[in-house]
Length: 210
Image 1 (tube, rainbow, N blue to C red):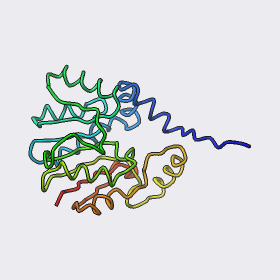
Image 2: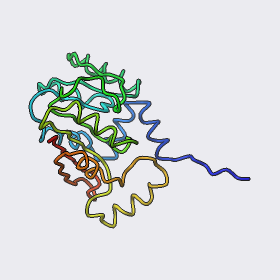
Image 3: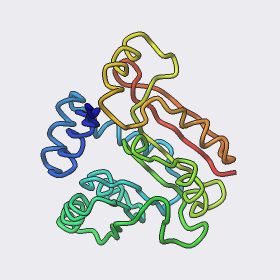
């Protein structure tokens, strides 16, 4: 009796990249034609006030830029290697920033603490998005924002994007075709999405707590 293989190529590559932060940075810059950090920096267009939580800081480059611009920042990163690398980068840059290895489903903060939450390129990793959104909503102040940069199926579902996602679909567990806007809207957020990047496969979601 044969056993079906659960090996997923893109999940394996993703896991390897997250093990070596410097290699991850180099490859993401290469595959994005140098646009990765510019895509991340689009979060600055929508930030209000000063107290910011970044969920999924990775190697900490966006977190450092947030600190350099004068925001009061806290970071969450579940992967210990990434968190350690981010702490080294932040400390070397001269900033004292808390980076916690904590689950998005149980954030260690009181209610209504943050003005904004930012997430870049991790939304597709979140299995239980309803639970994550409820926890983010809890720690956000009224009128606070969740600002997300993510990859996913564009709203126009253009042919090239559909073909690319068809090739990738069986090789990854990332939720690239989930309607993330619908999830935020369901939990009472006023939500807007803008697609950009090659074939519009990158998007920014801004969800405002009502």
